[in-house]
Image 1 (cartoon, helix red, strand yellow):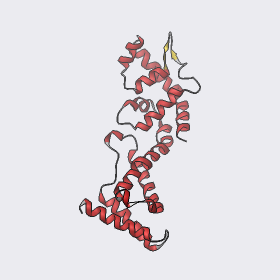
Image 2 (cartoon, rainbow, N blue to C red; image 1 turned 90 degrees about the horizontal axis):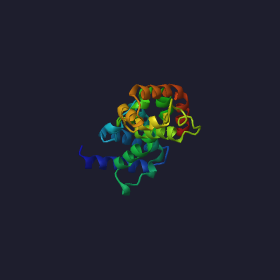
Image 3 (tube, helix red, strand yellow; image 1 turned 60 degrees about the vertical axis):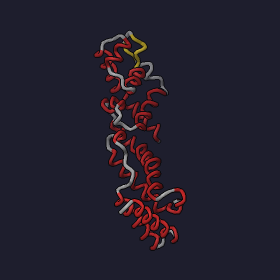
Length: 211
């Protein structure tokens, strides 16, 4: 089916559903056909490669289910004058339901499983921008001043907060150690000890941010 034919078909189903009462059989039949048509079209938005991160498929599936539920309950909000059905549902999926699902899953799918590798990999473009920003904000805000007060012996400027911010910015240990004029093992071992020490506090802060 050509794209213009598909758009016309989905519009017809949406209009049929809108003409009938919310819980009527006719509306439910049209809605079912509409959802199936959207899925079969192969044109439903999907995260780009630079948004891939752990459990992205589960999060996407959850977002898609929330989208379909929203369509069934709020189809009357669709205005054909503002765009095609696919444009409407893809905007909702990308800008609302996928982002909501990422945030809801943070605590149970990411924060509760935070590891040294997870925190280190936040500098990677494969990680979600939302995840990076939330963890960065937690460490930068440091409400109890624990991250800025933990530092390498004899080097008060080399705090865990400073090291973490630089690591999440993508700097290598070689670059960081040169900046603080220390050996790589000294800086990195301190950093990883802090990760272990503050792991529960980081999870607590991040969980609070997404509540």
